[in-house]
Image 1 (tube, helix red, strand yellow):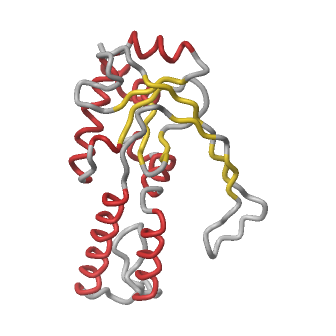
Image 2 (cartoon, helix red, strand yellow; image 1 turned 60 degrees about the horizontal axis):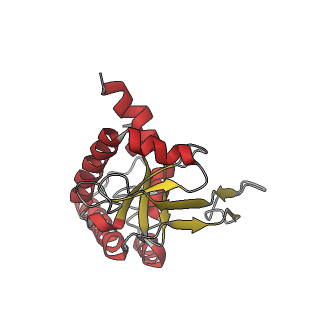
Length: 204
């Protein structure tokens, strides 16, 4: 789907790995079992058949990587998020893109208490609004059904990946293009995109 296929969402998920994820990739490259994209086998010649043992080894490495990601996840800060814009100049090894850089937008989120006074959805996922945009709070107040539907989607995804619900959060930001982001190894997902791409099309 568009939600799960987003590069930005994938980037947020990859952020959970931290240094442990980088170590796993280094081990995979050293052993010829591939990286995070799938159970590759290290064969540089696409015409050479791959042994089943090599595929199994790559799959096992992928499972270990996912386990590390889950273990590295952390609880969402209930007080909200305040972060400055960051510019990353690092480019993956082997890629020469000149002056290419990545700009990570800052975030300024406050707890949204309008659902139950606790700042959470019905299943306990933290909810935040954009502090600088009053329309964000108003949107959440007026679209509680969409918010709760998104909470169910995230709960099911957490079950698939083995993530505790307290490591993910829902926020609404009416500006910019941030679909999801990773803050201190806790994942935050923008309700705005779920509403536009999925909920609003199926609401009637």
